[in-house]
Image (tube, rainbow, N blue to C red):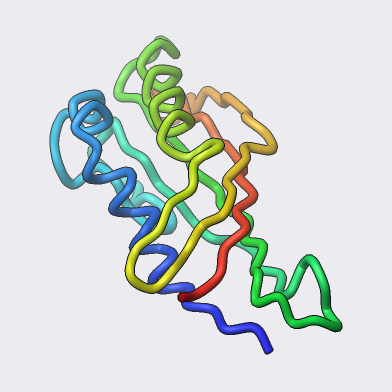
Length: 141
């Protein structure tokens, strides 16, 4: 039987991103890392993450490996018309997540790999958004 703790995984992702001083500097301070969708009047630059899918026991159904594959979407938003800022923010998020083994007292992340990266210009708010999809293999402790 798979045990999972989605809330603790979200906390781990938040703390990994929010507590990094380099990313915080690129974002202009605290309060710029959020879960789920940004509000229409959000203060940019911004990092938004969402867990969009979880698959249980991805390696061996019969053995009950307790490994959960999680699909994570991370969106980085600039506060500028040029893409330089959103690229720098996305590059830092990539450094913090891709290929890393992360853990807290409840969750062990064995691997994180970016599957895709899509830059998009948002003409209504005149900012760049980079959407990256990550696959995470994790389990509860």
